[in-house]
Image (tube, rainbow, N blue to C red; front, side, top):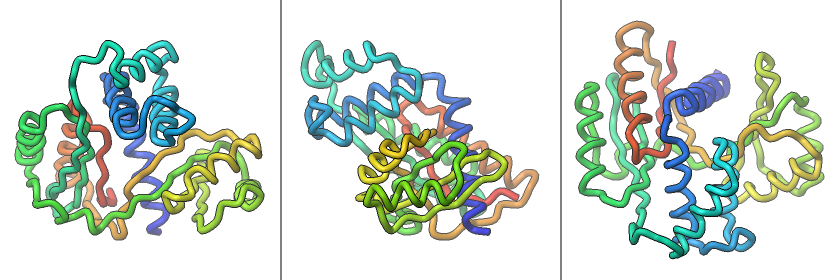
Amino acid sequence: MAKHSHWDNIKHKKSANDAKKANVIARMGKLITVAVQMGGANIDDNPRLRLAVAKARSAHMNMEAIERAIKKAAGEGADGRIMSEVTYEGYAPGGVAVLVDVLTDNRNRTAPEVKKLFERSGGAVGAPGCVSWQFKTRALFVVEAVSDDTVIEALLGGGADAVDISADAEEGQVLITAEPTQFDAISKAMGAAKLTVVSADFSKLPDNLVTVPAGDPTLAVQKLLDALEEQEDVQDVYHNADFA
């Protein structure tokens, strides 16, 4: 049951991101900027930049724009802005734990905006560490239209181990979760087996879920999640809600 709920929440989060982030290209630019600032502009030597570029491509950002973002972040035509990664923690109505990953060039602007979104929706921002202990960072892959056995064979052949696999029969997809250190091994294994990877990313999955009743409770939690997704500095929103 827990695995099914995790899968539903992942799909829900993805569809919310796809539908509501009108400024997704700008966000991908920020992601590339931070990757370059932390690991340099050489994509072959910077795994974080490779992931950022892959995410930008999946968001339909063309290569010309990606290359321009990399050059800008490396100092060619840069505007002097230094992007910072920040994670805000808090609670949605009903005690649902929420993590908000942000990329910002002005924490003094972003922090009160995020706090206001929580409060307007009946939630509250908490102190650092108040809910993050309930989540674990995992490498997350969604593979298209293959059987569990096919994926397992590809993973074993590619040297990946300690992974969890679950299938979604309705969507015809297989979900792979693993330790973050397995990301590169899984990527190579999927490529060598010529399997179609729908998405590859790092995610923060909750250890336990909080059941949210249908009706007004669900609407209240959804109001906060939607508002956070639409905030321009927010990159990802994670929660432990299990919607009835």
